[in-house]
Figure 1 (tube, rainbow, N blue to C red):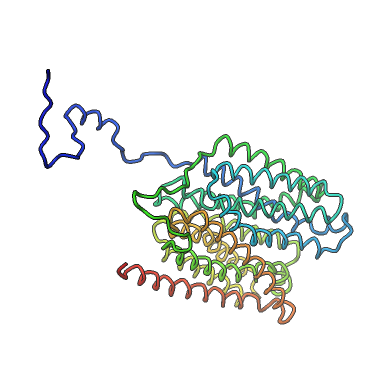
Figure 2: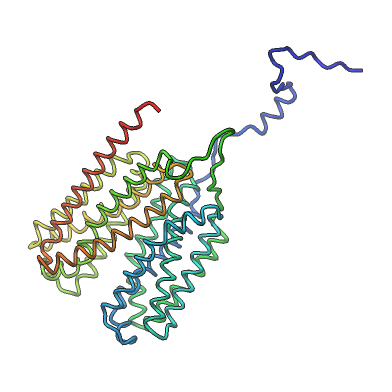
Length: 427
C-alpha cells in the first residue's frame, strides 16, 4: 500500500499543491485581459441613443403641422415635449430602482420596443389626448432606457476606458441633434408628421433587434465578500460624489437651455441673421459639438477634473464672445463653433465622471439620477429663459448663461476639494 506524505503541522488546513497540480493550474490561471475594445456593442448603443433622442425632440420641428391637423394651439403641441421630459424626471430613478435585479440587455430591448410602440401610437393617434398619452408612455420607456444605457458602457469596458466608451455612445445623441431631428422634420414636412413618427418607431424596432443580436450582455450585480454586510444604497460611500456631479450638471445644463432654447430669436433679433440662416448656423454648432465629443473621449479618462474645467472654460469663452461681438456676424459664427466644441464634450465628460465616481453597485442608480438631472435642467432652463425673455428681452440671455457657467465651475472646484479632503480623513 502506498503511504501518503506526512503533512507538516504548520501547513495543516492549507491547500497543498503538487508539482503536477502546479502545471495544470498554470494553464487556467487568470491572465491580463486583452479583450478588444467593444466597438460593435458601443455603436449599437449609440444607434439606439440616436433614435431615442430623435423621437424625444421630433415634435419641435413639426409643431405647426401637428397643431394644424389636430386643431390645437402650437403651445399645446410644445407641451408634448414638456410632458415627455417631466415623465422622465419623475419616473427614471424609481424605475431604475425597481428593475435593479433585471438583466441590463433585456431592459434595453424592452425600453426600445415600448418606445417604438409609443411612437407608432402617436402616428395613428385620432386626437390630441391620445397623442399626449403616447408621449407619457414614451417618456416612461425613455427614462428607463437612459437609466440602463447610461451605465452600460461602464459595464462593457475596464475603468480606464470608460471615457472613450461614453464618447462613442454619446455620439448617438450628438448625431440626433445634427441629423436626426432635421431629417425627421424634413420627412414630416414632405410626407406628413404621422409618417415621420411611424418611421422613427420602425427604426426603433430595428434597433431593438440589433441590440438583441449584437449587444454583449453584462453582469451588473456586485457580489459581497465573505462576511460583508450589505449596506443600504443611501449609505454607499460614493453617494456624495454622485449627488455633487448631479448638482454641477443641473447648474450647467440649466444655463445652456436658458439660452439655447431661444437661440433662434437671438440670432435673428440680436445678431441680425435671416431666418433662413438659422438652420445652417445650428449645424455649425452641432458639427463643432461632434468634434468636441471626439476630444472628450481622449480627455475624460486622462484628466477627468482638470479637463472638465478647461472644457467649461472653452464654453464660457464662446458664449462671452457671442455676447460681446453680437454686431459682428463673422465673430458670432466663430463663437458658435467654439461654444459648440466645448459643449459637445461637456455631457460626455460629466457622464464619464459619474461612472468613475459611482461605486459598481451605484452605477445604475447614478445613471438614473444623471438622466433625471439632465431632463430637469432642460425644463427649468427653458422656463427661466422664457421668463427672462418676456421681462428683459432676448439680448440678456447669454449674460445669464455666463453666470451659470461661472457658478458651475466654482461648484465643481469647491466640491472636488471637499471630496479630496474627505477621502484623506481616516475611516
